[in-house]
Amino acid sequence: LVTRMQEFGETIFAEMSALAVRTGAINLGQGFPDQHGPRAMLDVAVEAIRSGEVQYPPGPGLPELREAVAAQRLERYGLSYDPATEVFVTVGATEGVAASMLALAGPGDEVIVFEPYYDSYAATIALAGAVRRPVTLRPDGGRFTFDPDELRAAVGPRTRLILVNSPHNPAGTVFTRAELEAIAGVCREHDLVAVTDEVYEYLTFDGTEHIPLATLDGMRERTVAVSSAGKTFSVTGWKTGWITAPAPYIRAVQTVKQFLTYAVSAPYQRAAAYALGNETAWVEGLRTSLQAKRDRLVTGLEAAGFVAYRPQGTYFVQADIRPLGFGDGMDLARALPERAGVVAIPTQVFYDHAKAGAHFLRFAFCKRDEVIDAAVERLARLG
Ligand code: GLN
Image (cartoon, rainbow, N blue to C red; front, side, top):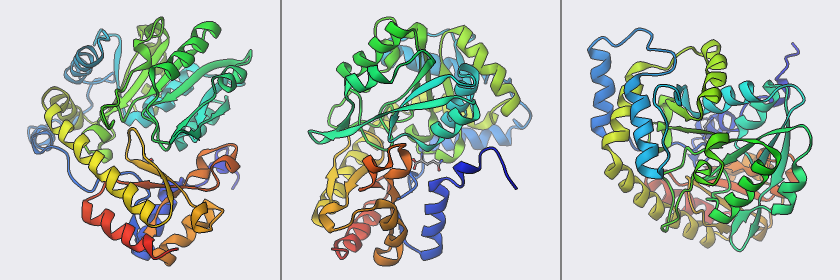
């Protein structure tokens, strides 16, 4: 059977999580926490189901969640959005990004992405019939960043969108104001729309600030910002996300979303609304705990002989495998469960220029300390 998406095959997360289950290896591949979100938030969802909230909610989302999102953007970033026309609920950030691509990029349009990129970007750009133009993030001074000249060179007459993920999965970079200014400058000069994926907006370390692109000069009017509850409240399986953007963009995205999924499960929307308004202290605790887990994993990977890049945000560490005598991350990722009892993600699958990422593995640290310790102990026997 020939299908239009067959070149995309199975996602690397499905492949590697299945490998972990099959071999019993410790799964530091797919990024999901092994501890629950705040109890009171879980109770809100349970209570919503018990009280009979089981039919279709409004397509654009429950007013309660849209108001909570508008309040969060205002309080945290000083960005003002009208909950009735400028906030929209999606099935996770995944649908937010996909519906934005389908709504805003057409056949032959070009979309700039920073590689390594989150895997759904390439697939949804392809679904839209558009073409991706990757700008490569490379290690420089211990963090992954881009060359502004390469960004400018990636813009052509067909460029419509730029997809900006910060904090960045899988590189772990949180873009600085200077980096965001370079992006904003290109958007203003070439009249591009930015779609920002901010799912790790709370999960930054060492005082690093997450700066939404929409807060920069002239950017609110041309930015579609996507986020979700999954990472912030450790409920990656709830698939409850949202978009904030000027009304014409929201309408365009809504036109697509109504035919993809129509609406989003109401109990999870209630719980996300509650959490946005009431669980910031819990999230701060999560952030602090993740920072310690990051350091725990980095120290362990270094002791095992990898060169590890300490991320400024997210759940993920990039590890260079060359000091251990390995050259190809895909080969190593496939062998690692048998050889060491650990699963990691080969970063090269997130590149068009696979060679640029051939020697990196991505390890997740959103796991209990004893799980991280057991994994690095096993990896230490690899060399
Ligand atoms: N975002 C998760 C990660 O990067 C995976 C989510 C998924 O499986 N699609 O690991």
